[in-house]
Length: 563
Image (cartoon, rainbow, N blue to C red; front, top):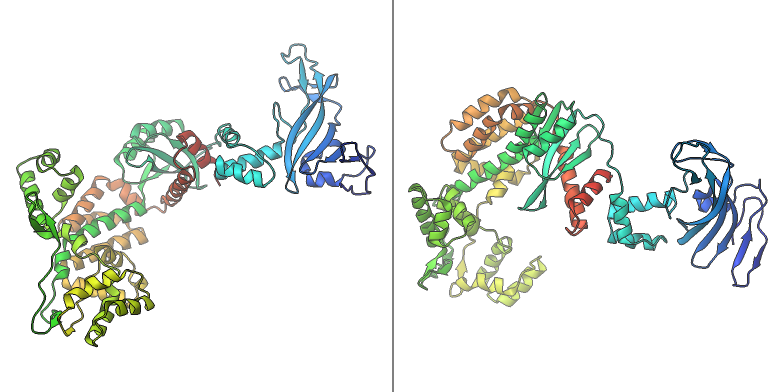
């Protein structure tokens, strides 16, 4: 039953069994129907039918004149009336239909091509629309946030059933937001299909909103867009040569600013390669550190990972890797290309490339031979229990499970197998930290490291003087970047490139010299591509939400309108 503000309507049951609430005379106060259906503020409600699972509102317009949509002339000469049905916002979780009587008017301008036109109610109707303006705005917002299928599921629960195709049509009908004047522009790429095709996202760094998405990431795409939008003063970008050329061609007067996040990330990659190259130095232990793993009359034979060569004979993984590395380096020294080496040795191109770019065979072996395992932190406990006389693998597995072990009993049995036949065993020396862990320690502020990390990092730097020198270079670059001391970059580059023992860092420094102006600006100006990286992450989320099935045009609309 519908209740009006001043009084309750008289009601009667129709022949079909529904209640019909009759409208009050003109001039009565606004009814509660307008509270639940705010679209009806400027029309006269005649009755409201409660249909059980839906609501039907019958209304008519009250204006005496209307404006022509073509010429704008106001006319009061009525041609005819007709009824149009619109879907409105749901009320109480039930769909609402509005049966609205509107009028057609004659246009009083004889020169106007629109001889007859229908009146529109502001905020309620638009030409050819079958939904109210408020409902269309709601569905468009849902489509921007959830796209097709997910949006259709949500609207059906909310009492406004619509199809996924309708939501996608609403998206594609949206106009592009106005770009306006841009002073600070951020540029970065993202993958449409990783390793296959890419696009470029452009961000207004002052408003932190995306302004456009380009299909491609070449210099021509960026230059063409920049020429169409003059007035840009600063362009923040990564160290891509294509974007550098496009910015130089499209906006020659703009300052190019290399993003600090990309600089720091590139430095981290070079540092990790440096740590891997010196991993063998970290594995060296002194005689005091070399405790015999077994204490008894005999020791078990050493086990090494085995593989089969082309003749079917067993060969250790280490031997195979070193032989392959030597062979590839010899072929490269003779001038053979990576493709020819790949064909001659029957290896994948990426494998040959990895062996050719490695500084030594130890750099290739380190990630495999020193891989951390789930059982590492439980090994001291297993050795202690073995020395106490407990050699039952089932019992030890149960004890480890009580301490948080989630692995299988076969892993425990495999570790205990070499201990069989020995009464006591020493705790094995702990493996050095992984190259990535060491890199993280070296690139972290000392005040943010805990006591254990500081001690272990100090041990690493003492054991390997080259890494100690690299850590000093990293601290110097971090100081430049934090204090905006770009004027010190030339001196830093000269010092690093002069250090022969750190080729990976030297290559990084040489790359900075090729883009010196942009890198100096990045280490001096306060601008960065933080909003751009955030938008790229949002784009990845939207791509996953659409399961990779959407075209770039739909993704572009969602990115430009997403909030």
